Length: 294
Image 1 (cartoon, helix red, strand yellow):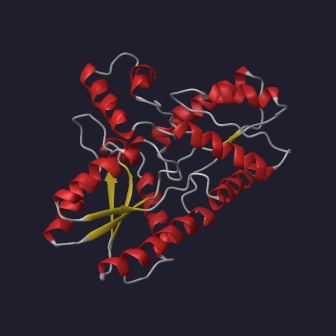
Image 2: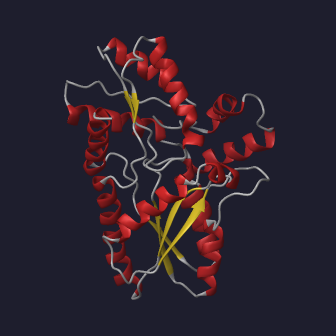
Image 3: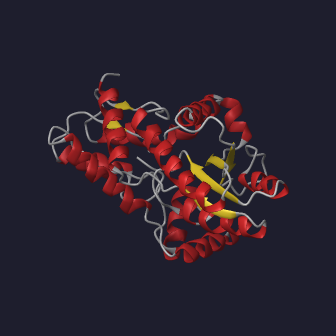
């Protein structure tokens, strides 16, 4: 299960209607339409469906694997209905966010449980717990970071710093559920143990929402400004929460953050996301098997 996405600029109004129920301003819609035009296309839905297909292949015929989105088709209920039609007798839901606040993710659980009940699959249903330190996932992040740093350190002749990024949340949400921050720290610690202990690293938040309330700090924008003051020549961005290419990466990082780097004279680089890497599919399989024992 994942959040969902508009595919192109033409789908933003419909997508926002599902999220905001008519409360999204025209200015916000136009802003995001422009972002989608700049990236051309968000492949989140296709990649998530491909992840499900690869997981199905790995798990075999004893399982039925489908992808469901919270705010765009195919919806979570569509996925549950397909599972039932394919012969499933119980369900395991995996939220495609390694670290999550139960407060924020309650919508996933609600959609999952209601869909299961509607299709007669409520008995024995499980939603996987946060899985930010799953070994296959952590090793994939570390491996991609090591490989990128080896090339960048050689290219620039210095030790290039990294910035671990994750999606920001309103501060009030974390005050209600501080476990989110603990999960982020656990993922970063697990990855760092597999990297050079002398590596210079930072951790920050990205993609803060369009609301006046206080969001988590430090923001990626602030970290890049500080690196500019330190005359940093290059940086490697390491997203630890995003699992497939989508707007928060293709625009927020590859366009907006890259532009800020250029303005600061910093060469922008980021690791590839997990997408359908076999090691990530192994991670998903491990999460499913572990959840069966809950």
